[in-house]
Length: 443
Image (cartoon, rainbow, N blue to C red; front, side, top):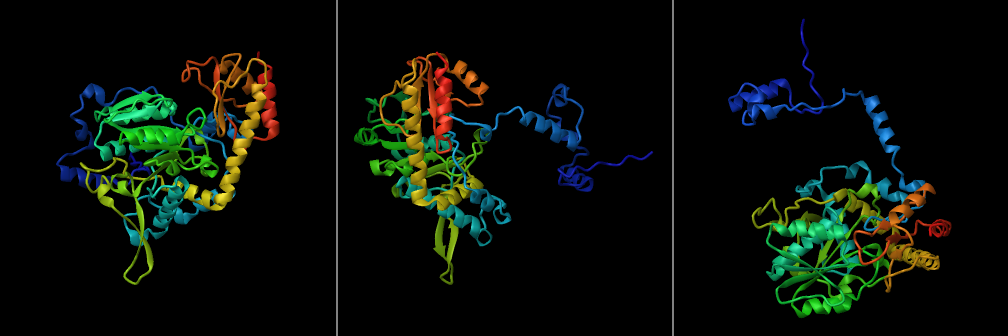
């Protein structure tokens, strides 16, 4: 009886190659590599079902996926950092072309001109969107972009205290705390009414619009930060820039954002792309990659990675960030989205979000038992105070296939039964009226 070795196509080396590597190491089997692990912990029993065929796996995954409520199956009024916007068909058609499905690291400029030019165009669009001097090639998402901006502000100012507005997303605040805790940086949560800043404050961190959807007095807060020679760091919704003044207009020093609204599906929370921009004077402290435009020996335009000494693969101990990559494919999606819409198209999207959200707010405010507890201008999200717990209301809405807003009970304890409602250009008047009618049934 003979046995045949099964070589999985997911293992890139053959038995002969494995034997040659083991011989070089002076051992006879792969098991010897794990002798440092106590024997009782090497192969713990795993209570796993029997393996499935590819057909059975597809059926199992389809069954699990069927338990989800797809965004396209009904109206959604959930936002809080991940937004349901229209994505033109041209975005997917172009970004999935074979020319773009390449390795993400464009170190060889002579073989990566297309990727490098896309990154350069992405940087230019982000810088223009936020009215900043320079933008990088992208970060993981909005939360990590903001946390990296905080670390950058500490490097620039050589201070170790950070003031984060209480109206910044709780998730973003937790990510900032995670990034800062091991570096001895003190993170203080401050009120935007009268932020407690001092000469040790490295930066004031704001969100624009804030987590609750409202527009704060960025001009006043910028002046307060700069009086202490601290930097103003702003996480800004890129869609809102279609109709509101950009953070650069108010003197922001570092501006970040979540790129998901720019042509990227909600996708259950990711992957996304983080936006990051700053002033020219701080460029050498900016994290992530930077694509630059130059000319070759014959005077032809070319694109290259530039200022690479900021990066981990060049100066590991003194790098500006441990993020040594960028979300290039989704940066491409955002580039296509912005180019397809143009300035007027983005403004139209922003205006539709604004107008529809204000229509929804006015209708909900007129319902018995409902109110709008936060006073001030807002963009596409607002807080509604409800006559019953939002979790109970959302269950009733789901019975009508309406995805309700975010339950803010844990994030806004000073309010009673608060719900964060988001309305985008995707919501029709009929859907808004259906939401209002369903809410009116709760008392």
